[in-house]
Structure formats: C-alpha cells, structure tokens
Length: 142
Image 1 (tube, rainbow, N blue to C red):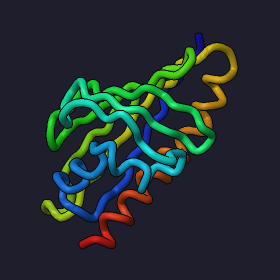
Image 2: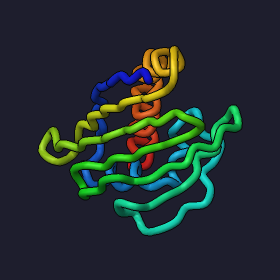
Image 3: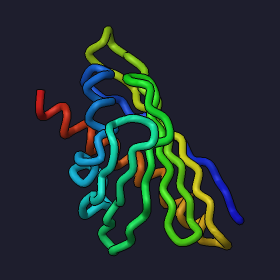
Image 4: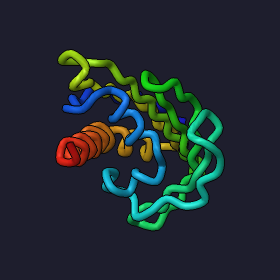
C-alpha cells in the first residue's frame, strides 16, 4: 500500500459560507471538477454520511461519502474504487473582512503499487486548478 498527502490553499473572493455551500453540494461538482462528467445516486442530506457516485470523464465510478461537515468551517469526503481510496479535507477560513475566504485542501491517496504515487503527484495541481475554477465561477455569479 502506498499513501501520500498533498495540500494547498486557494483564495475565493466570496464569503466563507458561499464558498462552503457551493463546494460541498455534490450537484455542483461537475461544474467545477474537471474529472467529472456527472454525479449520480445522491443519498441523504448535506451532512456527514451523505453518499453519491462520481461519474468521471474516463468512466470510473468511485463511491463517495461525506465524512465530516461543520458548516462553514470544515468538510471532508472519502472516495473508494477498486482498491483505491482518496480522502479530501477542505478547511474554510475568512479573509478580507468577510468578503473573501481561503479554502485549504489536504488529501491522501491510498493505492497498491505505483498508482498511489502517480495519482498523488498529479493531484496537487489538479485539485488546485479545480478549486480555482470554482472560485472563478462564484466570482462571476456575484
């Protein structure tokens, strides 16, 4: 088993609550997450325990679960697919007197063999780019 952590931070030019509500809603994910074609089988309220299936561009269908939700401060998910597990945590902190916030991300990918390392090295720029896309979408909606 190979495991690795990646992390970073993206500034959002919207209040913390706006960024939080947008990012934690599975229905919004295909709009800002480049690897997703759609989201299916959403079950439960937006809370710890909510589940859904990511339908990725290459056709993979990882099972997703919200593992932590403390609005508007922390949200975490776990995704699993064929021996691969990915954990993503987002932390939201206010900045610029409530008109902006920072979204910090931390993730861990577990997979057999070299797959975990390859996915980890590819993930930091991809997660950062997706969050920057989400920040632009929200800024344009103001």
